[in-house]
Image (cartoon, rainbow, N blue to C red):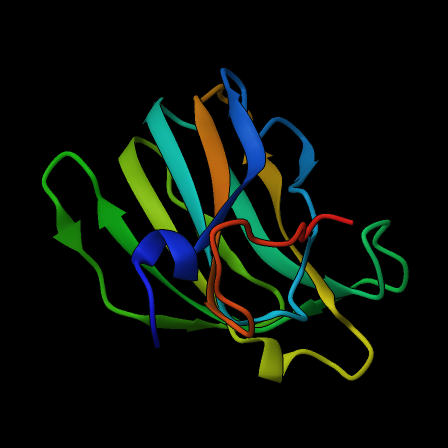
Length: 157
């Protein structure tokens, strides 16, 4: 792999930081996986008290989300305040539930080779289980590009 990290990673905002980020059912932007060999989705949460949310990953035919299907994925939790890195965990298509309280980051790994045939777009979705506002955001880090360069191609259309 040649070039700098800036030439080999493409960072996309999947959900802008907002005060009640995971209120109800929240669908992160869909990103096209076609030109990348690895994708990380990073969910960052600020201070929250009692709120919880279920996280799933959905593969779809296009940016509109047509024929979406939940897929299994791997993730790990990082407790930001103490920098405790959790174990890598295999999640089923049903996803996992973010626990209440704390300031943390969940790093989700999506391997495009594991996606169903014909599905080239992916999104991280959350569904609030216990309502309690929390500041949060979702970022996608696209890696292992087929074509590295100064200006990555759009992955949202």
